[in-house]
Length: 279
Image (cartoon, rainbow, N blue to C red; front, side, top):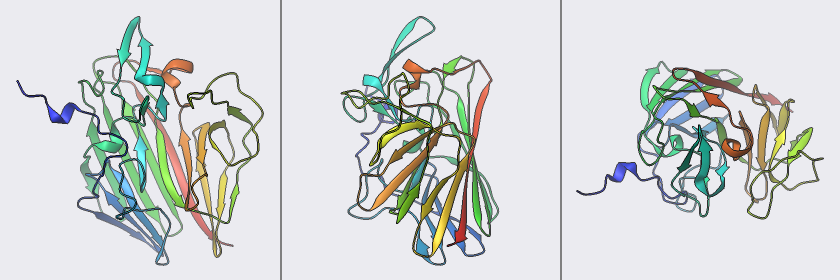
């Protein structure tokens, strides 16, 4: 029997085309969403100016453009391996030697609601080699004249499962990042977050932090304020053209260091709000 191609987790650097696009419009903000490309936001325009590092010929990889959901895990799972309820699990490795960012950002999402300022997307999680537990996920995006509010949830199906969720936006490089975390998860030689927590060093960063405060991105003519009920924030600001600020419900490799378990039918939900203001 031929292998089921849909059961393969694509390489994180494989090309992902945006596919058909949907629009949300509110005041000076326009949000373009690509449901078939991982249910991601392909671009945000404010007063005609692009806010994200979007898809183009030089920036086309699955992992590298737009603003996508992370689930049912966020960040790296060390070598794709973890223990759950006394059993060993091995996830597909999609950014060698680790498994990164879950399955949702690589799958097509179904549109449940689209009315111009609000969009709801749904996803049935696989129950195969990509993710053995099944379950489902839901996104809601709601746009007002000066802010975008996102809600993301994952729900266990008939089986208990571990879960971590979050978002991965590729923001255009700001003039200044305002970020004052309380602690950092130090990375080891494999680039994986570890415990115990430590004092945050000076940037640049590619790290996960404990943080409960709003994060600010300052540009020439605007300030973008980021808030979430997530207590874990990953900041990646090495690239010259972009800065990623990623609120998450748990740290990278949470399945191994800080697991959260969903019982059958139980859901994990978080929100993320972006607010624009003049400088």
